[in-house]
Image (cartoon, rainbow, N blue to C red; front, side):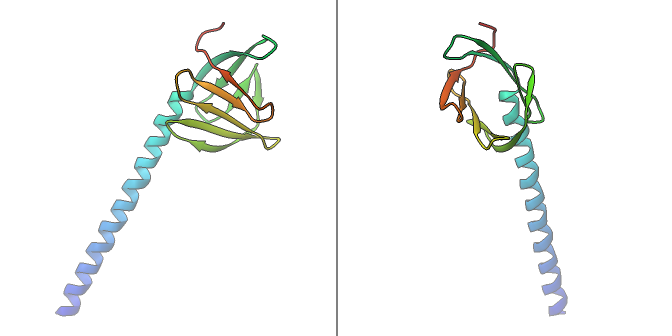
Length: 118
């Protein structure tokens, strides 16, 4: 009888822990989805030579710069920043602040992003 009670208590605890783990995983997925929506859109900026550029962030974490896709790997995504590593190993960072900024590690320059073409 005692074995049966111990067994039932043990199984109940395992079920509870499993449910908590699944719930946490679902919350993380939902958080990531809401974080990316902050960045998904077409942004505009001017470089140091006053040339205008268009940066598009797609929902699948893809970047397109001046209609050219950038091969990149997602490094970090949260409410504060969106970080990818490009094919050359440099980080590209969009920072969610006022104003939104785009940092290009290869050039070591930050650009102010605008939602409207300048």
